[in-house]
Image 1: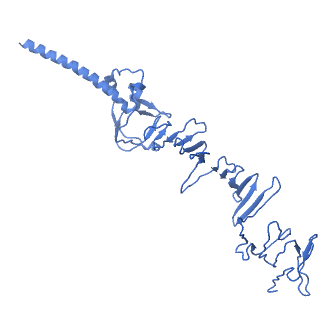
Image 2: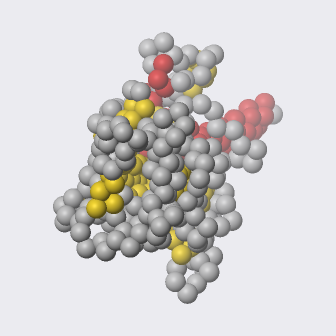
Image 3: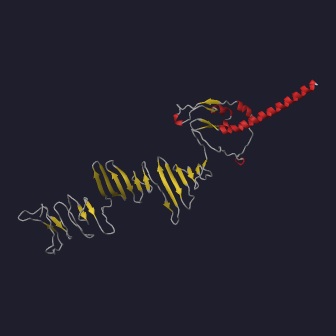
Length: 372
């Protein structure tokens, strides 16, 4: 005995030959003093005990160390290690070291509570799910369901990774599905912001495109990027760097170095007629100088400075074919279509000029004849 600590080894001098067909208890008595309490229950495996710390215990599999209902230890516990540096240290030279918490009740829960100051987490297996629950905020923060789907911010994941909330990725995000028997991949990344949105990327052996789908009932992707980098909006087969099937709206200036082309192939048109009274149309138009009302409509981000152009409402009375009205009633013009009207107006004007030239020439000849 030293400093009140007692070490005892049963069977070290005279081997024990107790038939463990009944329960035995270990009692310790020092000199003439009363027996120390409490007595310890003995099992079929030898063990060492210290008054304040169970320092070292080692046993083979399927053997029990201590068979008691409640064990309170103030200090460090080492399993397979004689100098534990933590409250519980487990060390093994086998291929695996494991801890098992089991509940044989069909509706039971196996759980661990982690409580540090003002934050408490509850780790459990329940209903074939692994769950990490924030007990402080009273919500499940991480879930793995029976099929292996992982949920962050949701306890009912519908994909292999289902995140309910904002996410930040500072490195690479890779999503893919291996197609059995092929060196090809197809990956889906689902984004749920009130309606279904997801990205689909197909790899080698497929069409190798990136598709963006929006809306749960969509029949085709909203945008695609082809293997050569062509972008299609409203089409799945872009043939140029950017192909848009539909209207484009821009609040600023669109600048090109090679011009803007509109489809004009005769094969695509029907009911083709010349433009009549082009001069009358032009003379009824009025060009104006103006500035955008940026103060009243700041959300439209319109440019500053003096501009020149036409008023859509006035043009609509003369050439309604080139006026477009959006869902909110605002009007815009297809200025490039004015070229066709101006061409016909010039031709009409030129025809009038030719007629006048002939009339002037005839008058000159008449005057010259009369002078002789």
